[in-house]
Length: 265
Ligand code: PEP
Image 1: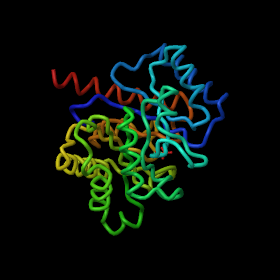
Image 2: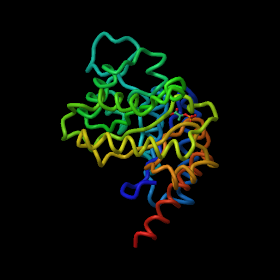
Image 3: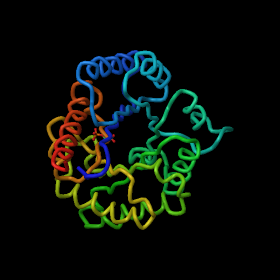
Image 4: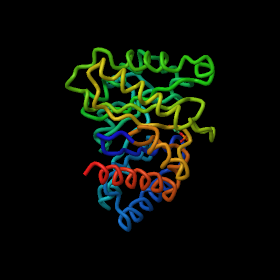
């Protein structure tokens, strides 16, 4: 874990759970957090678009200490973009966060670097927080090109961003080969990349941004990635679909942060 920032855990539900199932999971998370609150860790969930209104409603009415994130947004304000959703529509539903440039969108939905940069700007201009997802494919890693690849992704998305928006950006390092595969980057690989990202961000005057890791994170591996990987938290896919496994990741962050705070004092 890095020594500065409070941990952040975001559950990406992807295209799973209809609105009834999503409400049920939200409520389960609420009950479990009431029994054992997260003391240090900020918790965010990213349901599919059609579930957002229902999840936002129960989060507000049941005072569940989590924020709602969208998995994607269209960078245009409105107009002829069939099937898409705008930032103002999300804000109206109480959404505070948006994932930008998740590798599944980059790979399957023509989200190139220019669209990622435009989307990130639309999100922060609207007042929401952006989670910029970066990460290399397996062939890039095998050719040892991951540092340059991720650097380019960061620069193309963030270069020239108005400094007044810098604190609305979180970076998530998600090696494509570790997403949904059960393969996790080793703690050395995570540490090397988060260190690299923390060297690139200050060149953009963004040294304070949180850096998360994502890629087959689970209750079993969260603690070791945290203690050795120099991350500020996690973007969690599969393990976020069950309240127990999601909150076990949150708990690992809470414990690790408390331990480090003790050592500092
Ligand atoms: C993700 O979707 O961002 C992700 C990291 O998924 P998983 O945890 O399932 O690998």
